[in-house]
Image 1 (tube, rainbow, N blue to C red):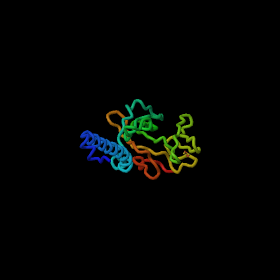
Image 2 (image 1 turned 180 degrees about the vertical axis):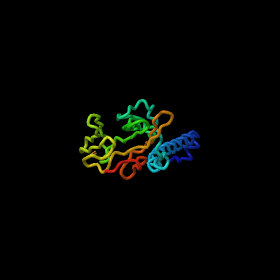
Image 3 (image 1 turned 120 degrees about the vertical axis):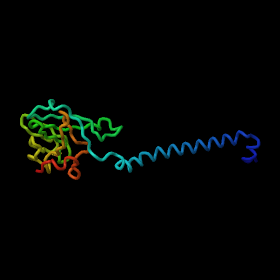
Image 4 (image 1 turned 60 degrees about the vertical axis):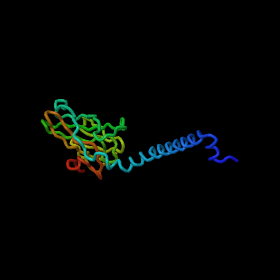
Length: 184
Ligand code: FES
């Protein structure tokens, strides 16, 4: 019976082929391991390496916001990831009271987060999910929401409205909306 060393002596190319196949196996194993490890590492390290702070977002020139009016503005979330696609978008209701006095509301209901709709005629925000209602200044009017709408910080920079946003405000972590939101 021929042994491996007999094969090698008989055919020197057998060693080369065997070594090559071993390296291929190790390569496939290595690539598979890395491919498996990346999402797992990303899951655990994501919260650590992602930017934590909200950022100032340019909402446009002041003359795009008439006084005594409220309008919905769609923007890209500054904390979006490269693969977020449509979910990288966010929005805010901008209410210009007068001059440089604004209120910027998160469109998410403070009950369970459904998007609220603004009705200019009645001066109310209404939530389609469980009937939550808010006044035009964001204060809670009726229904299950535990507080008024979350209100983002803003500043005027060279005639443009800048809004601090990024994280979705929640009861546990209102983020930049913490100090400005109205309670029920
Ligand atoms: S989510 Fe708006 S009232 Fe429940």
